[in-house]
Length: 157
Image (cartoon, rainbow, N blue to C red; front, side, top):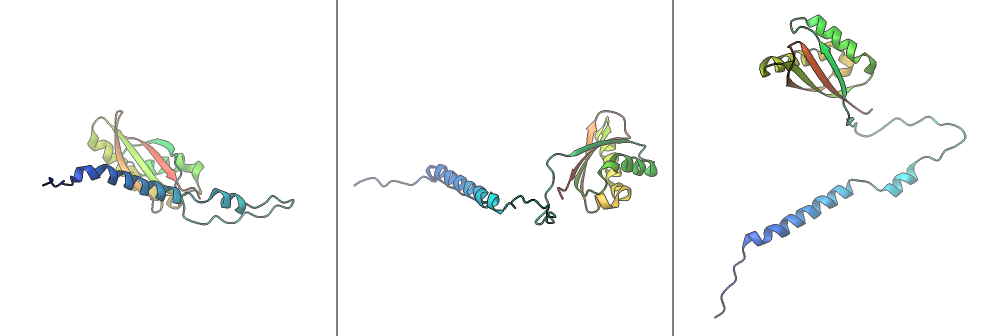
């Protein structure tokens, strides 16, 4: 009598991984769109300029953040708000999606607390820019309390 072969599940793991990788690759390629149709859809240049259509579709977030810094005492609410207004003035009219704030301190607690304090005042400083913005509080182990570095990720449109 011939011995019966047992199927070891470990032998199927490599095939399962390869199949899953193939599915993920197909999904990623399907999300790219058709470059030929995109080229055909571009408007042809004409002698008379036409107004550009308003952008449609979901908003995207810029990949590169705008980096700004500020210094003010944690207890000085008006000072923090004024500094936030100063450092974000040239970005007026834009809307922030995400703000990562790094509060400086030799120890973690005060640094995170300062970052939280700064983030809590963003909406007061520029309500149109920071309304509904996602914020995260971080610490930077170095320097004295009362300084924060902000990385602001704006929407593209």
